[in-house]
Image (tube, rainbow, N blue to C red; front, side, top):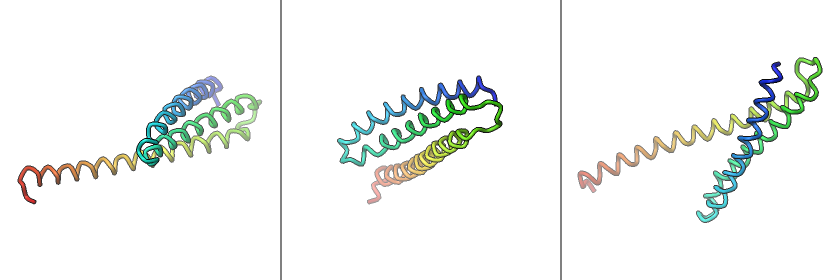
Length: 119
């Protein structure tokens, strides 16, 4: 395992995690005005940021305890947190794509009915 690359990854996990938590907090606060449901994306972003920060802590632990072992115990936890992060991100991407397709279809139908005064 390349220590320098893991150190760089740890830095970026921490940085992106903090920015994600801050952005999620602002989104959650702004979403409270949309009858609580608007806060859900912010809460999800906060959870994602916490997962990244946790992965950073495990990466730092791997760097500390890696004394010749191939994969120390913290490495499994590091991989688990990254796995959870990417699963949640993947689900969010799929939901976003589905909602986009749905919006385009509804928009096209509304345009058709509005343009031709069918109803």
